[in-house]
Image (tube, rainbow, N blue to C red; front, side):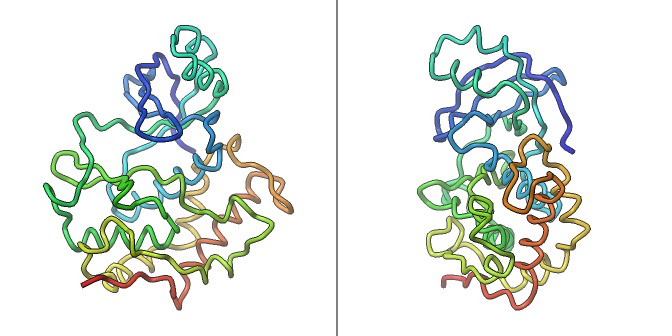
Length: 254
């Protein structure tokens, strides 16, 4: 599973996102953007972050490394902001930490244009995991040391919000609307990205990726009561989606 560390200090809230993530220091001397189990999006957003983030990194995308961070009840006692204190209290236990990239700034597509091939890989990957949250309104891309980094994947894998109404076959057939994707006009070579990435997504890889998710975050579903049964469902959905024909492949915009 993810490496586990202990939060030692809550530094400050990051108010750019609706889930109110916070900057924390941990006992491994690292600084992390912490995403909380007590936030409105719940644990499934953290599950999506881990599965999509770990899978993307193994396919060569630049995505910050993650850790499971234990939050002790005493940290919230020293927070003056009542909203933050409530969030910390509701999130005692295991939360998600994402490696903080100091000095990174938001990608605007102008100052540092994306490499067309890299943009195609990101666009393909977002379509594969059904990540709807990389638009001009909310790019979820950072520039760090002149390189493009992908962040915030909690909105992907929408199917796990309604297990009883989905199936691998339905997810495989679900189209991806790329018209508002941040990189749709910079991507070139989506078919090449498909040829490079699709064959690398195997059952073995997916089982290894979903194993990173802590048991505590995997909520039981009808017919999937045990954590490993829930993990198997994620693998089945993703394998079905990557199987040919991939009708969800986005088309490039001239």
